[in-house]
Length: 291
Image (cartoon, rainbow, N blue to C red):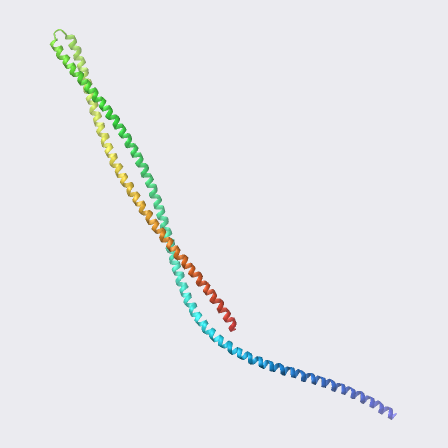
């Protein structure tokens, strides 16, 4: 029983030794793994140290680049401020030019309206001149008719005068034959009275015709003077319209020059905006690299 018990104890000790051996083997394996991990960590630390030195040198280079970029950034900021001032001045000039363009447009529109009114007045004066010329032609026709009637009346008066002279001769002959031709003498006296009455009537008509002719002559001279005044006014209106057209052309050319200047200023503004955008992009990229 002692031997059995010892054997049992030996078996237990052997089993315990096996367990301890297994534990030691596990510990050795763990220790080896730890050593391998430590070696790996050491290699990693060496590589990291090398990389750290490389990164340090690269950091120094980047610091130098950042310093140069900082200087360049300051320079760009100063240029940006200058360009901003230039842009503000350009915008102010652009506003002033826009105001000038609007003023010139209003002035051109006023000139166009005035030119249109002058054109309408010229047309009215032309129509009035045509009416006056037609009236003048009508009065000239009436005057010619009156002159023709006056000539006919003068012919009738001369005819009546010649008849009167013949009648006077007949009266003289009748006076010589007074005693024999009393009845004929009275008839001739009656005829003479009628002829004298007709002659006086013709003289009155001739005087009225002469008065009307003088009135028509005065009216024609007045119409001629009025026509001359209207023609002179028409010439002055045409000259004023030509001057207005010249002023309109000058204003139009001035507006075209201002529009050209505005287009050039717009192009300059677009270029400056592109430069500013490019500078902003460079600034953002430099800030990103700096960060």
